Image 1 (cartoon, rainbow, N blue to C red):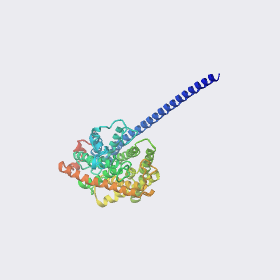
Image 2: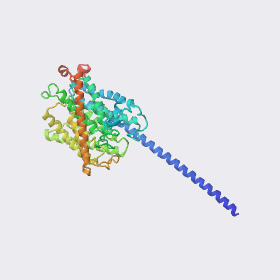
Image 3: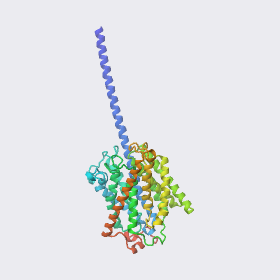
Length: 459
């Protein structure tokens, strides 16, 4: 009887152990399936956000920037001005696919590695649907096309400085060379693997969340150099040259404000809390800057203008771009307010003092705002906002970061000035930069494109 009970007990224990093992295996399988589902959902959510962000950034170029700049010129130049932005949407895309992305984001080689990317990704070789080195949850192609939208709008911003007087052919050649020789190296230095200014392993880690130095300083400083090199518009400043349609510019500025959420919050490269933080900082800074510009204008001129309001908002968006993923909402308000007032005085005072013809204030807003924003980032950055970078700014005790910001800004200024001067000189000697005085008086719509933006004679 005892033997029988022992046998039964042993069989029961074996059965229980087997059942327990099976339950554990089932639980492990379920946990693995859940983890896979969660990872898949995160990847899908991140990818969806990044594709939307890419579309938002493209919207900043056309129609946002095209309308903003188009409304600011005289009506005889509206199509030519808008066409310059549209041309960048097409031309830079082709260049990016051929070799631009590789020069900006592929690992560099040898002594040049901190300054320019290599050729591993030429013709988008190796850029597929698997995650790459820059984002763990989105396809490499998503990251590539997102960064493409930055590469498109950056040279397009420069066109505001030489609006109404550069040949279309010269503009095409100039900005192609500029994208290769100025934008790609700067993008690699700040964001590329092994870049000189990269916050991960760079010699001078410069905080630039979404392009303060890469986009706004380079384009704005290059705009100033171009305006000085090409000279003033015929009749400037003696002849008034007011915007022909502030309404169009107003619509364009509002589109820029909305699109900028993709520009800044999208730079988190995930649908994450960091994206939320950057989104909030972006909106707060734009609002504060609009208030700051309008207040300064109201005090100086006695009236707040619609053009001043939208210019202030854009200035705030520029100023917060490098800081968006590193600062608190209250710091964003301060950055926006300071940048709005600063850019107002750059546009209405400094420009008049020196007398340069930066037609649409590309330097006054983007060059000045981007420079100030990069420096203010070094003051207000907090490590807890962006745990991936984990770098504090000056006000949090990391005094060295302010020096790194100045170094990053200085490098952006130098590469922009030197590169732009060389390119302008070469293009001027090869095909000439300016339209003739007769063509300028007639307008670039007719002389460069053979059409008019407004045909009042049509019944």
